[in-house]
Length: 254
Image (tube, rainbow, N blue to C red; front, side, top):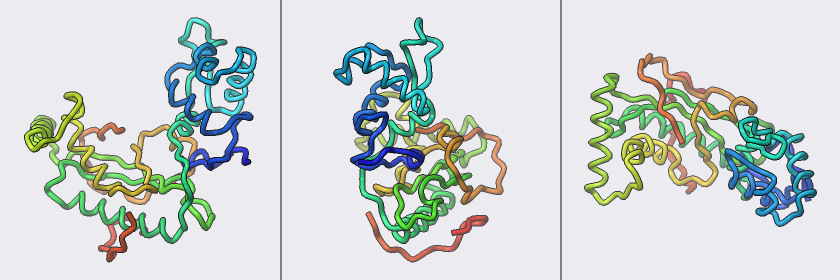
């Protein structure tokens, strides 16, 4: 049994971790179900506890920084919401760590894909910034996740032309059999295509946006930042194979 601590920012937790006296997996499930609002009644129902035990747990989670009072609720003393730390826990993974050498290889391949995205005309966005955070920046011989934040900007500087390209790209995907739940997914397809390419199906690469609040509480390092100036605002978010390393990106230490 292990009391969970600083490695929450790594987005990975052990199966036997404990938070406030409860299995971490159970707390993670609770925070996932109540991202914006967590009431005593909801927590009591989800956890199968009595109200007194639930109140104690929620107060303990608040003291540990996973939740905070929801001041917009009718009764803030009985309602909470996730903090940045709680949001990180809700997205945490349960899986075995990998060796630093394997993580370094994955990072090298990732940066090669960043270069390819920026140079290939088939992508409508370029990666303007790459930030590394989490367990890779520690001295540990094993790595939980390869936590990477990216910033995407349109390659087409004209906003109107860029919008037309994005829409056409999404519509072409529909004609080729791609299914989208709504129009927003169609418009996000070009950016999501870049994210999927960068992740390349890797289980250890955890990709997020450079504006993710977790970067405010986690140690981080900028790996790459484009020298180009683009007036268009950044885009909002949401298997081991040895390859020959390509030339380095300008400004990248890897």
